[in-house]
Image: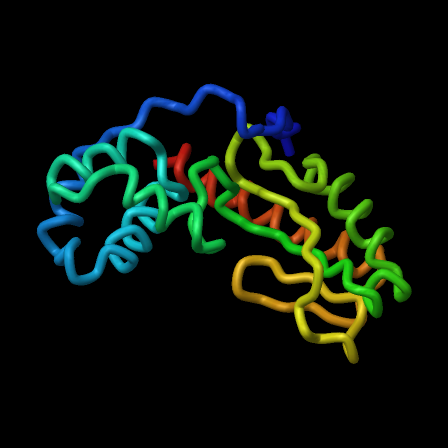
Length: 179
């Protein structure tokens, strides 16, 4: 398997070019004045984050000031203006998880996925973040990858999950390049 591009994406990095063509359909499908949060959720689902050109286009098409839109984006933790990975990995570092070995789980994921805690790989496949608590203390240490939660982890178990993810991504990329 080829080594992935592992340069992290940071908040200050230049954003990739964004095609705002899809924004028109999103605004047409959702009443921005009645459901701006829903519109932002759909836009973030489409783009993976809310890049500035998308926010500006939503503002232009809806007539809602961009400052109001950014106020909502920065208020709700579900929104991000920074590119994140297609696969989002969170490791709980609450007290129970910390004591049970969350740091070893995080280190194992950093090594396997080649991404530092708090960063996103440049290929935008994986983001890794430590979180304060997932509310699953009885299963400590705990991590969540996309919509799947894993408990009672060891570093080796976390590595196995990461390797399965890497294999899945490689298979998807292989099927795309085979087409």
